[in-house]
Length: 490
Image (cartoon, rainbow, N blue to C red; front, top):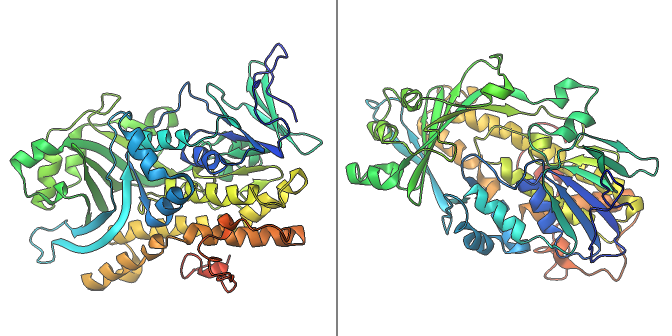
C-alpha cells in the first residue's frame, strides 16, 4: 500500500498513527457525502482515509440544508451531529441552525380570488435546517485526524486500476496516490463518474432538467416591521401554483427564497456561464405576478446580497440519469456524483448521507478485508442504487404535485391532493430507515461472502434498534418495503 508521492518521489503522507491498516480509502470530494463517510468511519483506527478536494479550502455555496428525521437521526446517533453543528454554526459565514424540527406549510397561492387560496397542508416536525458551511464544519470536526487526512488543491486528473486491483490517482504536476478503493463524492460534475462512464456520455455528463431555481433572500426584521403577520416569517412555506412553486424559509435574521421555473429541457446551457448566473431581483418577483399578496410583499422586500455580491441568482438544475451501476471494480460513486436529483423534497444531501452511512457500515464489517472490498461495494450498489433512483423519481413526482402538473391529480379536489402531498413524505420520518438500508446491504454482503460474521462478533452498531431484545426484528424486511410502495422492480 503506497503513500502519496510528489514529483520528487517524496512522501506527502508522513505521520500516520495507523501503521498496519486493514485497507486504505481515497475519497474524491470534500462535500457532504464525502465528509459524512469519513466521519462515520472516524471511530475506526484500522482504516486509513485520504480526502482529496479540488478547491484550496473546504467551502460550499447555495441555500441551507434540510435534513429529514430519517437522516438527522442517524447523524445524531453516530456522530452527535446536532450538537457539533450548534458549536460550529457560530463560525460559519451567515450561519444558522433552527435548533429543532420545523414544520412545512403548503399553500395554494396562484389565484388570490380562489376561496381555496392560502394554507391547506402542514407536515409537522418534518426536518431540521442548517447552514451548509455549518454542516461541513460539523462533519470536519468529527473526522479522526489520526487516520484521515484532507488534501486541498488536489483536482483529480484521472485514475487507473492497478494489476493488483488497487487504484492509482493522478492529480497533475506528477503527483499521484494509491489506494485500495476510490470513492467519488465529487458532485454532479463528478470527474470520477466521467471516467467510470467514459464509454457512454449519456451517463458521464449531467443533463439539464428543464428547471431553473432562482435564489434570493430578504431581511426578516425589515419584513416584520412592514408586514408583521406575513406567513413567510413563520418558518418554512411552500407557495404552490400552476406550473411553478416558490419556497420561503425564515431562519434567524433572513428569509431565504427559492423560486422554481419550468422551461424546455432542450434549452442550451453553457456550463461556464449559465449554470449559475446573477439575475435581477425583478425576475424572481415576476414569477409571483398575480399570486398571493403576502408572497408578493416578501419578494418586493429589499434583497440581501449573497457572499458573491449577487442580489439574486439563477441556478440551472441538472440531474444524473439512472445509472446501470454505482460501482466498477474498486471504484464507487456516492451522493450527487451517483444520483443528482431534482430538489423538490430536499433530499440531495440526505441521500448522500444515507449512501455514506450504508457504505461505512459495510467497510467496517468484520468480513471486509482487502480481498472482499469489491464484494462490499457490490452489496452497496445492489441496495443503494435502486433505492436512490426511486427517491430521484419521487422527487420529480413531488415537483409535479407542487406545480399541479401531476396527471393522477387532474380533476381531484385540493383536500385529496393535500393527502398525497403528506403521504409521499411519510417514509422520511422513519428514524430507523438508514439502519434498515444498512442491514439489507450487510445481509447482501454476507451472502456474497458465502457466510456470516464470526460467532464472537457482537457489535450491535450494525443492527441498533433491531437486536435490543435479543431477537432479529427485521428478518422479514423486504427491500421493496424499505422506502414504501415501489413503482418499478429493484
